[in-house]
Image 1 (cartoon, rainbow, N blue to C red):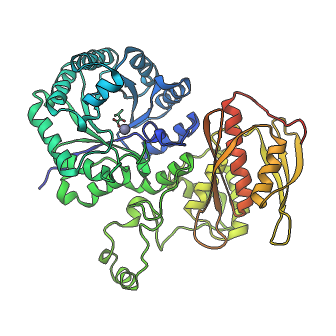
Image 2 (cartoon, protein in one colour):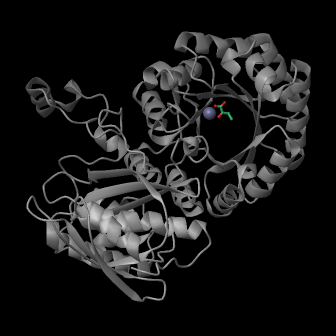
Image 3 (cartoon, rainbow, N blue to C red):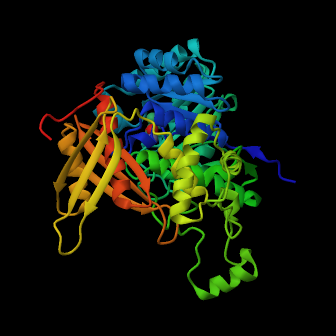
Length: 516
Ligand code: KIV
Ligand code: ZN
């Protein structure tokens, strides 16, 4: 009988994932995602980089105060002020961790830090010791480890463990490693770092060559017992190892790995959708585990096999990641408040009575329009209800006329901060353009729309459309989303959501245009 060792899952979606170009999460977004990650039972949530901005400091503190069940980590460079800020933010957590990093490759030490090996070694050692004064759980990462001289990395790890690091994380920062080579590196660390038994070996792999999950798994085979990863594989450049790939590979091939994780995999699908909603980063349809096609079969031969015995062409049961197939639990307009509440609880929402009142009204309206409501619709309804930003401007009315012989025209009425009505009409190249122009002439918030995406939440012609917009203003990015069975309404809601976020970031309550 193989002993099922645990591989700890360290989710860095809110830190490295947030470093994805164009992603900007508010403190409320981070809080909501952290609760979902904790419910999924990841062992660690790296909530941010507290010294990087006052906003991130605040977000990490809030996560540390509110989220129970998972340990909360913050990132810090090997400098005292970063570590001090990190501790101030994570100290409220049930289980706080300080994650200290410094470069170990010659190319980064010489050209970026402009320090020699001995100087960097001393920074690493002394700053781990500094972090240890605050926190018993200290993780240390030699950045760019895979392009560093191995003997130097061994020495650095040894000194950092001696100074108090309880986890040593080996980053493949630029996604350069190849699985066999990376596994061997981990094995060599175990053999060449004399005090390695006092620390957990972790890995953190980037996906520049598309090998981040393979590298992480090769490390697990060679003794790594923590994997750092992001939901949907988001992250800097090509991203990080995808949490769902690492976790499901370990689960599906338990025969080979002989290890398990603490993750409740039935949350994967929902957390994946939440992550893409909040970050605005869509998941490609053929993405392993969480892509829309991951459990779809096109070939007749495959379909025939699946009908006879699912395992003929599937290695994962969709229910294991929280997808229900065939026996989809569907609510409809006859479902009551109680039925709605219990289904929401079953799919992981803790919902207050006031929230339920509002979601129930929206649920009935939607059920009247589209008949059957499944879990994905419910998630969209709760997400609409729980907008993670103060809604200074709300859509009250939208009417458009368009067509191949008409000038697209939109009439928009908004409710402003004091519930005052404001309305105007605009024309545009299409109904979305006309609606956005009308909104722009009511709200004075200059911005550049850099992305517009529309997706269908469920199958079927009557499905809700989910719109994500990304806009830039004040050298920052704001992501907004909206859902509705009418995609023009969803578009207007998404645009207003992004504008409300922009307004909140400026600490303003209103931005009424003077000449609508
Ligand atoms: O990729 C990397 O090296 C990192 C470190 C800060 C761990 O993200
Ligand atoms: Zn990274």
